[in-house]
Amino acid sequence: MMLNTIVTGDAARPPLVIAHGLYGSARNWGVIAKRLSDVRQVIAVDMRNHGDSPHDPDHSYAAMAGDLADVIDAHGGRADVLGHSMGGKAAMVMALTHPEKVERLIVADIAPVAYGHSQIQYVEAMKRMDLSGLTRRSEGEPRLAQDVDDPALRAFFLQSLVLGEEGNRWKYNLDALADQMPQIMGFPDLPGQFDREAVFLRGATSDYVSGDGITRARGLFPRARFEEVANAGHWLHAENPRGFEAAMREALG
Image 1 (cartoon, one colour):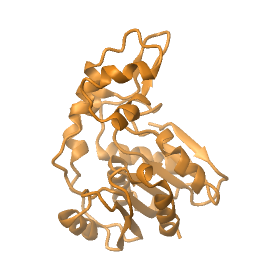
Image 2 (cartoon, helix red, strand yellow):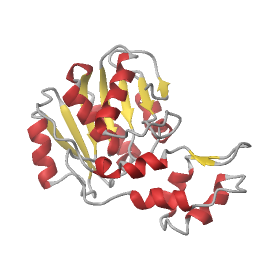
Image 3 (cartoon, one colour):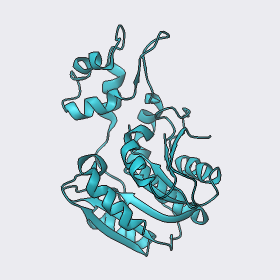
Image 4 (cartoon, helix red, strand yellow):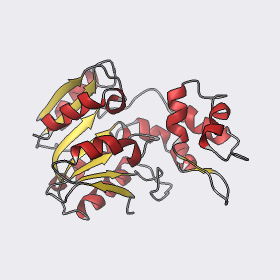
């Protein structure tokens, strides 16, 4: 399937492809993409079942890696790839299964391991929310607040609410995300290694990349480097955008 993309900057080889995390979109990465496009082309994607990309019942990492490979093929066949969280896992799987397409791999605050915390509660909250009669996204805020305590998360989710004459709807394929949540939280068991450069950017206050995750990353990515972004947790690109941008420029050489 061909993903929806937002392309900024002049065509250069290789471009930078950005894969967002669960419940995200290409638009969430607009500021970072714009700033990094001063020296190259940046292609931010809507992952399948998110944003304006197609819906599909298969939300496996193999499928997402295939989608990213198709985007790279459409833009010259080789790219630097940045993936955050779920997008970072998809980028790692693509590097391991399509290594010829990846120049440099940059993984933002995730490791190639299974995580114990599920994100299913947010799918359920969005499914429960009454969308009728809404004419502005802000009107959905108090309704979503019944199930989602964090105002920043509510604002984040509501960016993917579509209001229209044909009815209001979420851009997410909530059924597929619910069905595949165990796979999303996991990581496939893959043979082989990616022998080019891999940079793992960690939020200094995040616990997503530690211990077993670092050991597993070094096994799959022998040239892995681990760098910290100060004053940031898991959402490092949103919490410290300038620090994240500086770390990206260094990682991209």
